[in-house]
Each structure stands twice: as C-alpha cells, then as structure tokens.
Amino acid sequence: MPFDPQHFIDRFFQPFNTESRFYWPAAIALAIAFLANVVWYNWRARTSPPELSIRPWAFWTNFVFLVWLTVLLIAKVPFFVFAISIVANIALDIYMYRFYLPPQETAWEREQRRRAYFPQPARRKRRRR
Image 1 (cartoon, rainbow, N blue to C red):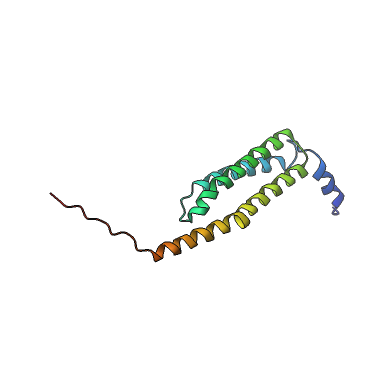
Image 2 (cartoon, rainbow, N blue to C red; image 1 turned 135 degrees about the vertical axis):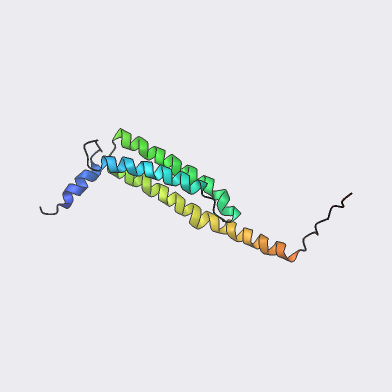
C-alpha cells in the first residue's frame, strides 16, 4: 500500500465520526487528560509561592480547554479545529510559565534575600505559673 499524503490532508479537514479509528482514542485521551490535570493540581509539591499562585490559573485554563475539546469531539468537528485549540492551550500555558511566572519568582527570591538581612524578633517564652 503506497503512502498517500493527500489521504491525511483530506482526513484533517473531515469531521470526526464514531466510526473513525481515531474517535475513541481521542475520547480516552481526553478522560486521561482530565484526570492528569486534577492530579497535577492537587499534587502537594514544595514549590515557591508564586508558582502556587499561578497553578489555579493554569488548572482552570486547561480545564476549560479540555471541556471545549470534549464539546468539539461530541460535535464531530474537523480535526484541524482540535489542533488549533490544543496549540492555543499550549501557547497559553507556555506564556504563563515562561513569561508571566519568572518575574514573580525573582521578586519573591529578592524579598527572601532582603528579609534575611533583618534580624527576626526573638520568640518570647511564656512564663509558667
């Protein structure tokens, strides 16, 4: 069977249907993505406060995009709409973690270094009666 690139291009612009061999793997991948997103959000890792403040934004944008992809899958839209949506989601996550988060982390680290220079107040011991 010869390789026909036109077949893949045609399939890229045809709507999904339940008889397609890619429909059920896409549905299972969406379910796994939902679970992975929830597990990642609830994972208790020792991270900096700026990342903990941005994590809900990343979680909810991913969640909204996954719901959007589920709607697209049910509506059986062409695959290129899925591809555009996935690229938009990845671009938004990259923006958050590559451009929005680093200035906040450097400001937090600068504040931690600044606080190290100031003496901390001594703890008062309570007198027992």
